[in-house]
Length: 132
Ligand code: FES
Image 1 (cartoon, rainbow, N blue to C red):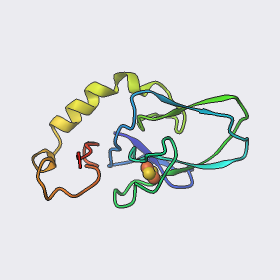
Image 2: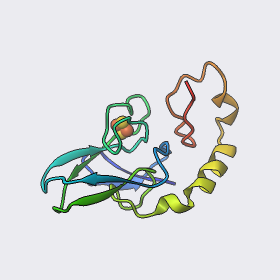
Image 3: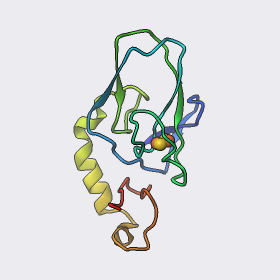
């Protein structure tokens, strides 16, 4: 089960909602400024990865507010959204594809995924994203 931080990034609590996988690998970000405040996308739906673009609205997942804690040239931020140390990549993505397939196979909403009236952006029961 994924962990979710609340919006201010302070609380790390179990989360019943599974995000979409934006990418199986890190998102390389360059030249952030120490102290800069960013909203890291937790839902996986943003088109501006790794940052929130508001696509999470209606999913129940919120972005994580992150204050850049150190000055460096390259930041490898999590794009799979299943890291255990957000927003940084911890290589969780390497074993994730099998977990995602398995979770989607046993999802209690699986029978509803392909129905035309499945209007959600994301099945938070398994991380499945409809192909609109
Ligand atoms: S948390 Fe993903 S778009 Fe906002």
